[in-house]
Image 1 (cartoon, rainbow, N blue to C red):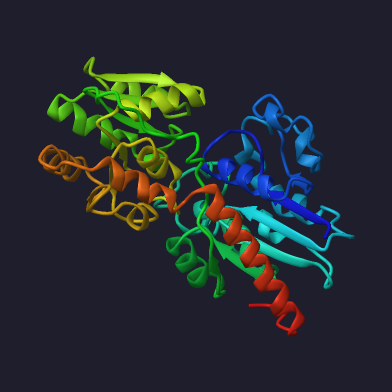
Image 2 (cartoon, helix red, strand yellow; image 1 turned 90 degrees about the horizontal axis):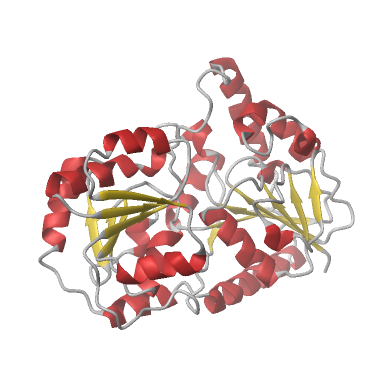
Length: 364
């Protein structure tokens, strides 16, 4: 079959981009479409055929996508997908709105319904001045219509599946993302006296909670990641026990995972690869209980805090100090999200859809 994969934009690296790479590993000959592509950020894609939209040539597009949010419906609809047997739109915003021919199978592998439209209390990335209420209403109307276009949905978690049902009234099959458990492995070295936070420094990640709690308890915290919140977070970090490491390579990240006492995960995510990477490296997780972390972290692999408040995290950190975790349990749980299982789930999911298509079930 001739397969195309559509991704929203390739301008920075995070969990969704890791999922894209996993999908490209399953379909190494698929063509890749994306609205905006910054090759400097993704040198590993230099040998792959990538088709971009007209937005790729617009000023600032490669570094500040929200400026062009109003044009993204038009950009997505402009892709020519004739001749493909299967199109998979991996998306957390606009790419599910592609237009395909009736004979083409369109599967939307959805991270979430567009969060900055439907869940602004979670994700505040939409520009407050640039997107007026009238424009937000227009994008919501378009997004609802776009949600009807995929023939079938895959969801990255139960959390995402619930949101797909709530917003688009569509059923979805859950296919959890993969972690490279062959790379993220434990070590025999003893743990060092620090906690770790990994992720982009953007508001909904709630890195401020990790900083506040660790300062309250005088605990060492290492923060990996870059983003627009860097300046504000540095001002919050008034004590020397908070260390900003910026962006690190995978080898450095692995060492940080291995030696941390625990990884702090404070955001309400659709899924969350960081907790699994930590567990694969033999490190327990302290996470906010809502969203994907509530599906991933068990009593044998970490501890959850109930309120997205510094006080709740402080209490949980105190409880954590009383608990001992078995590295075998951490590794075993991480293996549930290995690349092998991911490939099997994708293959099985595609086979099921082809069978539904053969039975005349064109839409679910």
